[in-house]
Image 1 (cartoon, rainbow, N blue to C red):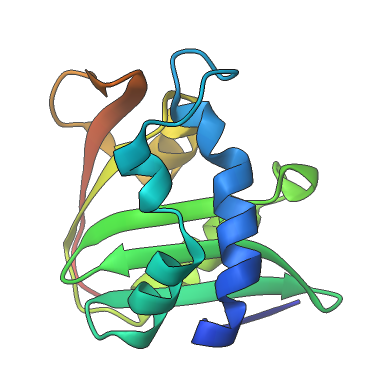
Image 2: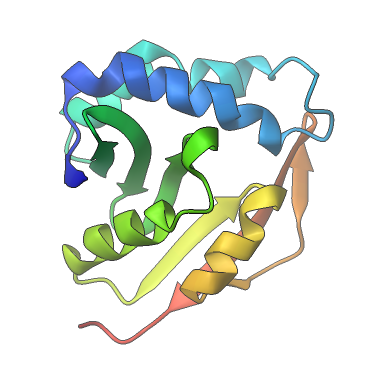
Length: 150
């Protein structure tokens, strides 16, 4: 197991991981992703996020396989946190979260969680900050975490 900074060479694997799980944001998991959402998941968009300075990006590898990814948009918005379906429920999201947040001097984080990931974020200490929302069939729950900076 290792956690490292993601780089542009990871873009194809990250695109596959995130796109494969993005249906969990949809009211109807069998529906097609809206264009605006699908375009944010293109390989080119991942390359841009990984190459720029606007995001903190880390991956979790297990036996040489990339199984999880976190991206925090500066200064404090959790943009992506995904764990491969076959590795969920093993504490990987927490390990990746704790590693990443130790690198940042931030005391408040925000996220637009998928409905299925709300329990994960609650275990990290997040609370719902406003009512759940929906845009073009994409459901999300705004959440916030306030903590003392370590």
